[in-house]
Length: 116
Image 1: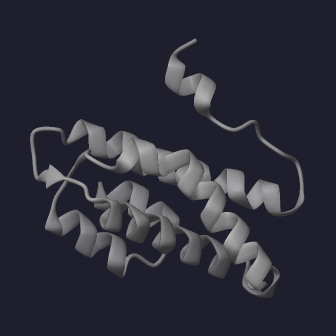
Image 2 (image 1 turned 90 degrees about the horizontal axis):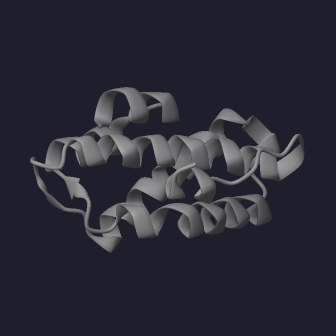
């Protein structure tokens, strides 16, 4: 098993942790896709990576409706995503077009499939 595979969180069956796993999986997909573009763009900054995490969190929670809107759930989701993704994001190649796509995406799936 590769080191990256070992770093993925274990799936959880219910509640907020299921949401965090789902959002984390989407972010990891974005980051893996970003790696494929290693020859393009510039190194991603901490601010850009935080923006990606925030946007994916916002879209994921919005898709959950009122069930995903509590302040605690938002905070917990952002923190969980930051722990699992920021270290893999900062310094990876990204360009302005990808960031614009992230900002305008309407779903996390759109970010994964179209932005990177």
